[in-house]
Length: 274
Image: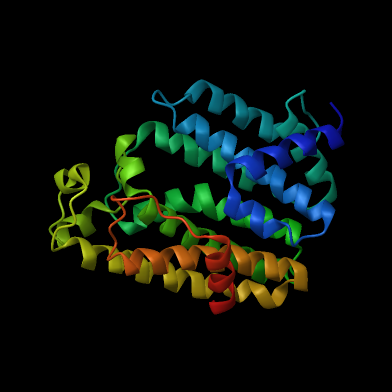
């Protein structure tokens, strides 16, 4: 399989499984768009393995080994071929890709987090690492300044994912909201299981939202370091996610009743409003 064929496959995966992500990366020039789509397809594959009813530890370990060998070694898997080519064009840190697999391996062993400090390390691996890898494609004017901001923006988006996906994660046997915060606001796991929005739920989730917004403000300091099209791409992701956060607020954080989605018009409004 050559690089063009591999990119065609990772582009397909991105279009079919990540409408918000695919919507944002259309702004990028072709080579950057293909590289970021390859990173998304890799993240998606790893996440899908971790989210199986029986998490695929052996397969995740195999992916970790394959990634450690990149870009010098690859097999016929489209994602690995595309990643190898992307790494030959951009300074994508291998350790960021390894971190992502390590985060998925955490999901094989851990389903609760005692505190934000503990959860932050998980988020750093599964989302902060994606931010760092994508930032290498965006090529900030200062990597030293851009890397931590990209990582922080990844944390912000993951925090919003956690809020949106409470019910879905519960079905997988996981609770990502920190245990000490559940206890502080008097929210039990039985309430989560029942999809019940009790008196402590709103203040608990508002605290999660405020954390996400603080992380996003810091992460968006990345924008001045990017070229115009890369900055608009990042702004699109952040705007859409902030739009999801606004929608959750409007529902008083009832994330159980119906799926949370933004229409194309709502996405544009959210990006403009950011």
